Length: 123
Image 1 (cartoon, rainbow, N blue to C red):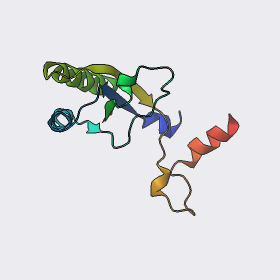
Image 2: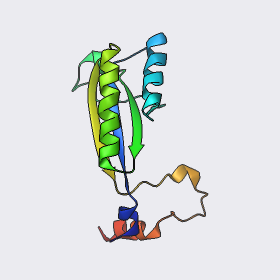
Image 3: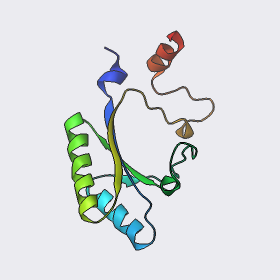
Image 4: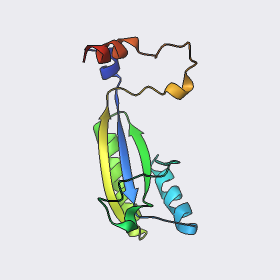
């Protein structure tokens, strides 16, 4: 089996309706308890397919070495957010097989896992 797949991890996402000011700070504090980070990028959506109230949704991302770790923390985070009065829209756990951050590479660098990149060339 490919070494990259064996070392893969899980990413969990929780999305809530917009929160500003002290509510935003509370959201970040609750997320931090479970090892989630509030996304620094705005969530961009196709406004033709959604209602206007969700244009400013927020989301947080957490990672886990196993599905159960990521899922348990995700569900606990959702529970605490709902208890605090946040409107949670979605939670999701994904299995990450390949994740290369090209921003950390110099132009002359090769991706850290050249085997994974050669697999992409075969597809």
